[in-house]
Structure formats: structure tokens, C-alpha cells
Amino acid sequence: MAKLFSSIILVSLIICASVRASYAGPGIGSNLGLRSQVDAKAQGGAFQVPAELRARVDFWKDIFATYTSNQIVIHYRDFPQVRFGLLDFSNEAKTMNPVVLERYKDRIEKEALTTMREQLTALSKGEEPKTPFQQQVVDLLRDIPGGAIKYKRLIDDDLIRTQSGIRERYAEAIRKSWRYLPVMEQIFVSDYGLPKELTRLPFIESSFDYTAYSSVGAAGIWQFMPRTARAHKMQVGKYVDERRDPIRATRAAAEYLRAAYSSLGTWPLAITSYNHGISGVRSKVKRAGTNNLAAIIEDPRERYFGFASSNFYPEFLAALEIFQDHQKYFPEIPIEQPLRLVSVPIRSSVSANHVVRQTGVPIQALKEANYALLDPIWRGAARIPAGYVLRVPIEYQQHAERVITPENVPVRAASKTKSSGSKLPAPIEPAQAAEREPRISKQRYIVQPGDSLFTISKRSGASIKKIKQANRLTSAKIMAGQIIIIP
Image (spheres, rainbow, N blue to C red):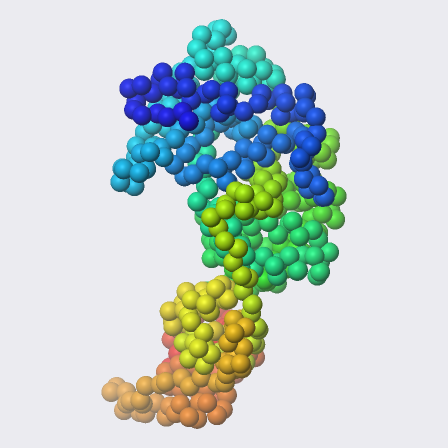
């Protein structure tokens, strides 16, 4: 493999070593289908790999399953299958401090890109190639129209891109996927009549990180945004976020993909819409004058989609092929047994500790069965709300019904106010609280289904205004399971 050891010899290595044909991949023409035949090994069924996309799919397979985080591929942004070079820091990673290594990688990467841009500048002026790297670029971009302008675009439009490998992260995704994948396949196939292959989308959406949140606020393995999630009747709140519930979110994803396919007519377009939106894909199809996604993506003259949307379907095909032969790509990852769970509807709000005490389920196992429950609940700052359907590992099924028993709420002793001398209402004792609902004490109240600030005000004697002030509420909206202070 090509290796850059220092900035001193960086230029000569970039020119002579790191852009050998073995690293660069086929020319763009073959990737566009201009000189290629259908791949005999292309996948059967609804998700065959078009010949035009084969090189792009193979690029992403390498990123997912071959290259590690210490290897950086330098490639053409518009056509990532065109690889200009590889920076390999595997040996340095064995001896360098992680912080020092990252700084070193960043410096070498910047120097490599600077050197490439300098050589591309000569080509952009119409000069003949004089170095092996320049000749390699000319050969790779031979089927891209534009003459010297295309080399200038590489610089002006920042079309030289770097991509680190993610083999380690992808291996972890393979391992985690088994927890829920069988039930996800059952939902897609049995409940919605969809191909089971669609359940591989979380490999590229979230790496099957069940607790994932993106920088723009998407969450869960299917990466739903709050507005879309609510449109699919998922709860998104401070204590419960059903976007992180693999089963609930999988049903929502199936609903979306079925509607997208019905609207757009092909799976490549429907899958791309998961990243670009149905109306967005439809407008691109109209503009391109074809519903052939491969032709749209690999068009050498015009970019219809941005980088993420152009590569979304090819990444999905790469994930599909890797998973179908995962033991070849990740022999070190054993197949885990899927989680086997039973559902327990919660009748009245309870704490996570109450569930652990009543069922004996270890807290980590309970978390992995209920990703929708957020950190305040696990920290004990909030309770699992009434109406939530709790999932418990099946081996604890015989104790699961104990969860529905009411949980006593400890309260502080009554005290006198020094200013007026009047007494606060006597608190309800724990035994009484277990016997009758709703439970109101002078300190706090657990909101029950059907409650409103009006009904709580009538029962407690405190005005709605004072209740809102005591709890810093800006509206009259409250939810079951919420704990509020009664002044």
C-alpha cells in the first residue's frame, strides 16, 4: 500500500506511488456503462446492482468492510469510484498517541491535497501531463467532457474529497443488528408486504446505533426527524422518544417506504427519497427526463443530486451485499441471538428502579429492551409514564406482571409556613397512595391519564395560576407520568 511517511518526501510519493492503477480503480467510462457488460455476479431479486453502479458500489463496500479509520481514500467527489490515492496510517497508529496521530493524519492529508491541486493547476491551463499523477488523472477522467475546464473544476469546486474507512464501526453495526433484525424483517414482510432487504437501510442511516442522534436532530436507527416521527404517530418528548424504539420506528419506516414506492414506482427512487424526500426525487426525475436512477447518478455532464443523495442507494446496495456475506467480510463477528421480549402495558407511572426490583431484570438489559426511554428515567429524575408499553426479556416473563402494581411515592413531612402560620394540607401516606388514585401530596403529584390542570386544581385547592408558577409551566399542557409540584 502507498504510504506517506513525512512531508519531506510527500510530493514524490504522491506522484510516483499513491496513485498507482491498482488503487485508482477503473476509468470513469466503464463506470458509466459506456464500455461494460452486466456483472454476472450482480445480486438477484429486486435489488440487482446495475452495471453503471458496480464500481461506485464496490467503492462503498471497501469503505465499509476493508478500510479502517486509519486509512483515508482520496477520490473524486462526483464519482467516488475514481480514486486518486490512499493514505495509510496503520503503522503509525501502533506507536503514536491517539491525539498526536490525529494531528499527524490531518497534516499529511492537507499536504497531500495541496500537492495534488498544484499538479492539477498545470492540467487546468491546458499543459500536457508531465508526471505519473497527472497522467493518471487524465486517464481517469478521459470520459468526462470539458477539456481543461474539468481539471479547473476539480480545484474551484473542491471536487477532491477524502473518505476515511469505517470498518471498525461497521463491524459493531453488524454485531448490534441481530438484536432486532429478525423482528424488523417480520414487520416488513408479514405486516407490510415489503422486501426484507429494506431492513438493511439502518446500516447506512445510523450504523444500527439504537441511541443515535444526528447533528440535525434525527434519532434512532431509522433517523427520523421529530416532525416526520409525529406524522407517523410516534411520541417525541423529554422522557420518551419512540424514534429510538426499533420496533415502533421500523413500522414507521415501512409505512414511509411503502408510500414512497407507490408514489415513485421503483425501489431505487423510493430508497433515495429516504434521504432526499419524495417530492425532491420526483423533481429530479422530471428534470433528468428518466426514472433510471443509475443513469441520473452517473450522468457525466450534470449533477442532479448532492453527494449524500447520489450515494445513498449505492451505499444501500453495498450494505446489502456485505450483510448477505457478512461472515466473509467480518469473520470475527459472531451471530448474536436476537432479543426475545414480552410487552407489559404500564397502568400507572413507575420508576425504572421499581421495574428492576419487581422483575429482577438487570438495568442494562432493561435499557436494551426499551431504547425509547430517555436518560432522565434511567437516572431516576422522571418515571416511566402510564400507558407506556414496557418490554421485558422473555426469561423474566413470570415476574413481568409485577410491574403493573402501583409504586409508593415517598413524601416529605408536613410543615408550617412561618409567614402566615397556616398548615399545608396533610400529605397522603405511602399506604394510602397505593390504595387510591390519583395520588396528590403537598409536595408533588404524578399526572394520570385524563388529568388536566383544571381537575388537579379542583382536587388540590391550588389555583391553576399558582400550579403553573410553581412548575414554571408556560402552557396548560401536561402529560401522563409527569411529576408536578402542588403549591
